[in-house]
Structures are given as structure tokens and as C-alpha cells.
Length: 37
Image (cartoon, rainbow, N blue to C red; front, side):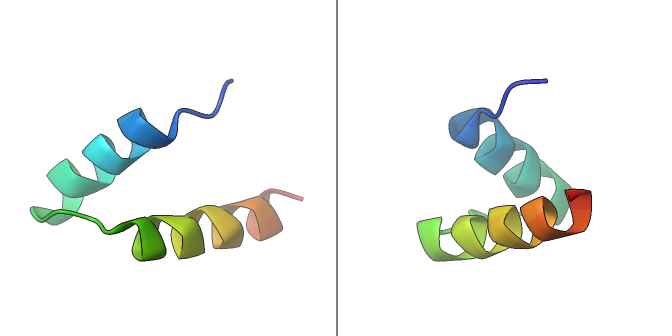
């Protein structure tokens, strides 16, 4: 499973119904990486 920030931001945008900023996306990705390991 590859990581695609652009696709992920699009998915988050659809899920939350709003645009996700790079800051929020970075925090979400960081938390995801911690939970995955």
C-alpha cells in the first residue's frame, strides 16, 4: 500500500466535508504512522 498525500488529502476532504490544510494533513499522517507501528 503506497502513500499518496494528494489522494489522502482528497479522501480526508470528502470524509470531513472540508479542505484539509497541509498542517492538518501532516499531523494526521504523523499520528497514523505512530498508530501503524
